[in-house]
Length: 555
Ligand code: ADP
Image (tube, rainbow, N blue to C red; front, side, top):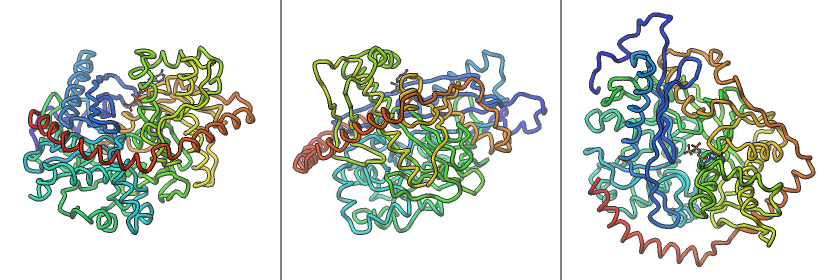
């Protein structure tokens, strides 16, 4: 499979015990790709990052160019390796490569040519709101969450795939010809990095497959029941779907077939939020982490049995390294750092994220302002798709600082609501919350979080925990680490703990105001507007399909 390279680490298994070993990690995020090389102590010794285009063709639509994603990853590998070798390291000491990726984002491609048939539809995209409503109204929709862990919404990959089948001619034609391949970003990347149709390495791990709604979360196999449910218009058995394999595997993910690391094995794969839990070493039931990136995702390790939430959370796979899967309860918040970016890009508040936090510090409190940042509706634990971004409490007193502060606070309130739901679902109270992600750089945001949830917030010094998680998965499969115990000391030095300082009474008062704001923004997108929006979207769609056809043709 793939080009061979005499410098491949798989062929130098008898390396001297004392030789330093490294693991590479591809971190394919929503706004950028990175490649990091970690040593055995979990320290990154080389990093390269590249942003790629965010495509917003219509309100609520969010796309990526699948080929651009692959190129950005290849560039990152090259960039990081240059630094690595310049520092005197030898690439032969890289034992394996792991992959972590944005989840749910959906790619359709032609299984024969290996070329994408449409842009990737990103997890934040809400064009499927009407379709999700239609699916929810179908008999049996309420049974799906027990099987796959997720409720129907715009969020999982299935609605994106169905939308593409309905609306995009190229996708439908490939389906009719039996050539349609569907995958999340992990499957797409692994397929392309392995040389595409030539080697046809077409796999996904359970942490990613559990985000499609096609996988039975109990058996980690495709579920006939959910596939039947969604097959009322198109027979989804005709769509090529990746084989579901373990998150750490010596062989299943193949190897890189081009570039500076050609021949190096890919031995680990985890969806980004599961990777962050692993990178935070959340290996015991009761461990939890919250990642404040573009969105914000709280994962709580529930052990070896999935917990199907009755309080608005999702059941997901934390990891499956050895055939004994570990599960998590998840609270997903659609808008976190993207709220900061909104203040920067749309309102011109600043050109740097940390300045938004500094702006928020210019005021002593939110001045009575609550900003419900429901740009994609509200996700967990509310799941309100007819909410829209709304500010409550504007007055002559309101300054930009208040708006900045209210934007940071919005994520903290939603995290508090998620933790309350987790306590109800699991019956346990969390003792501390580990955090990471770009927005966790904001001291104010983290202190506010501690004040609102009344437990310590622990932030590691090295915050590339998502990439570290993928490296750990790959390192387990390639023998770099053998037990969780060996990882105990990894990334513990220099962590910061934010202790709650606010009185319980004040904290409860703030939260109550937030809850009032949430209840008041419900139903803002009225039924007739939704229908008009759907009609308008359908009209725009036919034009957009033509335009996108041209873009795809020029790829
Ligand atoms: P992703 O992996 O989802 O692309 P990252 O973890 O890289 O996201 O986080 C990027 C987000 O964090 C951006 O939206 C950025 O605006 C925000 N961010 C970064 N630094 C800060 C800061 N000091 N204060 C507030 N937000 C920040």
